[in-house]
Image 1: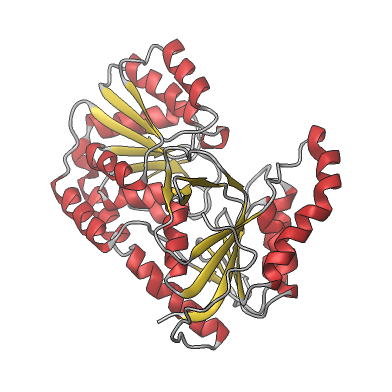
Image 2: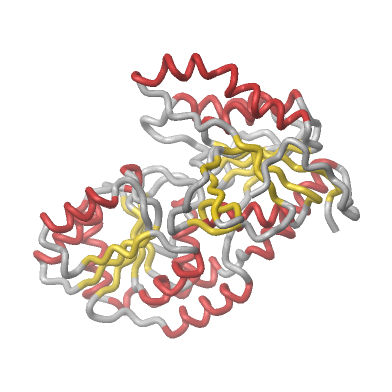
Length: 397
């Protein structure tokens, strides 16, 4: 059963046409596949490049997904502001054109195209839904555009649900706490079995997985690893992911004398990340801003000791089920990991609680929850999808 509608997804995520397929960042691609299971056709309004995708991308798995290519809108920095103003008419026209052809609109925030979508979508459809994937309660130093997107989603989206990570007091009824998982029920079951047999050993196996960008603060994790070395704590650190910080972080690893203990795996598809959860004892996420960090949820499912900064929804995820950092320093990361290495038995109960909690989420559960959410907020039951939905204006991969 599907809605017999053409759904437009407005997203800032860069897509890639390669080998006759449309690719995007793996977890995001799998989530759009779920939306495609609920609608007769999904058109993604997003930037798209004709080139080989990075290693952490996956092809979309549903045949009813196509792309309506949008201009890439860079973040507003001093040198680019004039160019952005000149390009604004085109930046508005193209998503507005795509919205005119849609029956329903799903806007993904935060992002530059998400901001345009939040402004324009209520003008074009009564079937609206949005996702805010960042930290809904904000964080120090965040760009003003993120605050504006949250304001618009609170004030102008009464006709459709806005899913956010975590439950926050004082929000209107259309702001809905919602959580996602890219692990199938079968993968979740395997992770649960892996958690029951997990034992922390020597050397301590530490994992980071995610985009290698400054906001993830992997450099602070490397500084913490150096402190572990100075304290004679045996460890291996695997960094899974790719991004603009890769070269700088590799260089830092050499300068810190950690080359023999740190492995850069690079960007890999989602299914290839899962064996690294099986390998690790601990997962560390040092970033200061996260909405629903899937890496933590996945690591918890595998029974890892997850270490992350106490902020946003991370606090409720790891309270009693992980290690929350308060000072966000390399010293605190090293102290936490040293404790796990020296007294592993202290963390047996915590690891078991983490896995039991995280096993409630799966991609099948996401599909059912989204369907229920739309029925409740739109007041329309899912029906039989038509196979004759027009794809005019969309660029097929």
